[in-house]
Image (cartoon, rainbow, N blue to C red; front, side, top):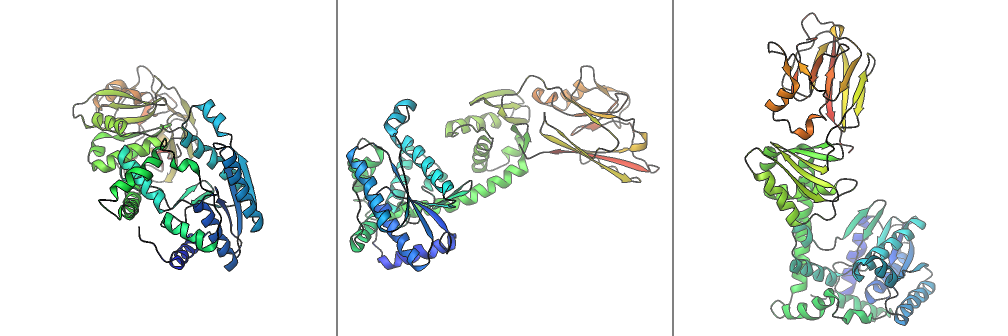
Length: 475
């Protein structure tokens, strides 16, 4: 990658820092410093920025305790520089060898988990809204190449994000477009001491073999490979951001919360581009309070295959962590495994204007209007009644054996069970559909299906009760 003049990239980092909002008088940041050239260059850069416009820098060093005396020497280097430069210091010994033995995690994953746990604790202790790390352009290129080799999509090609918000803490990587060579030159020119991690040449680690062996070989075919990979990550990031926004819009338009899970209409889903289909399924699997862990390509494709089948069918897939994907006719449910039946009853009195059905994640809104209003058949989730002809208390309940209804526009009564079969209502949903009944137990309305002929609004109606069923998006 081309080496940029040092003043040029320093100026760009400072300008970006102002744009991102973390460099200004009175701001506080945590700098993750390992003692290597990348993080030491970052710390020196932050020091020079603080001389231009003061802000608080908290140095955080995590001793992974993998390399004995070498790890201790790195910790001492960071501590001495923090003292010399007058910066607050927080250190921790992570005890990783013992943690890895007890959890069975691989060293890289365990290191990252415990390191970021410590860094977040430091940020919280010092009320810092920003966490800065020394990841650079070579790290980005290696990450993208590793993901290509392992198999990835557009999100994976985006590589390491420049910034990421996690609750109240924003993770910033100011050096992500600066090369390793540039950082080494920066340390040399400015007399910045740093430690050399001997494990960086250990080919036991996949990233090291990429950096030491594969990258140099590929650079024979493209000397600007690292720059190309960084550019690919930038383009993939923009594409991924756009697709994520489109997916979120589609989610709110096409997906209905159902308890702790979600429902969607198969035919409408099939009308989406396959790229949106895949992302929508991933979003659903990830947006629960207890999401399925890292949905993979095969898992998503199995769900798409079931939803692609044209013949009405009932199929259930176990997708892990207690979640299922259940296809019933033209409806699909994704979420925790459903109980066989749900029973509920809610009383509705003359003064009530809203109630929540916790068993279904739905909300009922009641509006009392003066006079008669037009009857709209188009909105099946809303019904109007002549309130003076209603017998209170009303009830909203689950179905009961033998339920019948006198549907509006039809002669005689019909069994609710037969109505469900005719409308191809999935079996798993039938017990969760709320039914509105009056004080005599007469069925007035099945939201989303039919209303009865009782208490119809006419030209003579003086008081109208309008009832609307709303799907809550709080789940």
